[in-house]
Length: 222
Image 1 (spheres, one colour):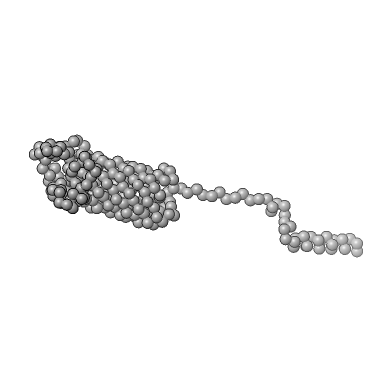
Image 2 (cartoon, rainbow, N blue to C red; image 1 turned 180 degrees about the vertical axis):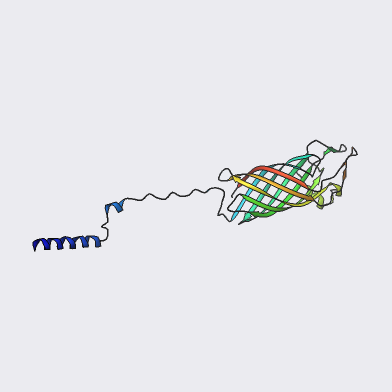
């Protein structure tokens, strides 16, 4: 009887201990390692509104004779996966070409405003857009390009005007939290291609399409 009573008491004590809150197996009290937080990869973003500035070097053919080189500065605004961008660029031909010597020396070049609008992925560094352009061939390059205002006021001859429409796509690869390496490819089709006569007697006319590639740096929110 004594042994049986002892066993019953031990069994009852064990049951009570298991039922008491806070009494756990020592193995279960070992602290578990915390899950590591994922760092942002810089490629994707959850920011719905973003703005920034881009500076690019340009290379292309079609707008001016030979290989064209230039540069562009542009500001952009993105809302979700839609964006709009306004750029101001200058192009010049591979070789210097003089349009007029007197009363003012003017070299052949293209000052152009470009408006782009399209899609910019929030998950991948990809973009695609349509564009329209307005500018001036052989304008007063000694000052800030004013092709659009001069065209509005009628100060630009019809054969010196540049109007074009087209599209393009690009990649904006992150190199830091607020900077990206940008590469773009575009195709612009001139609207109205009047030949322009230079003082040397040479006639210059844009091709049926202008193809371009650009590489630059973009800073701002992704």
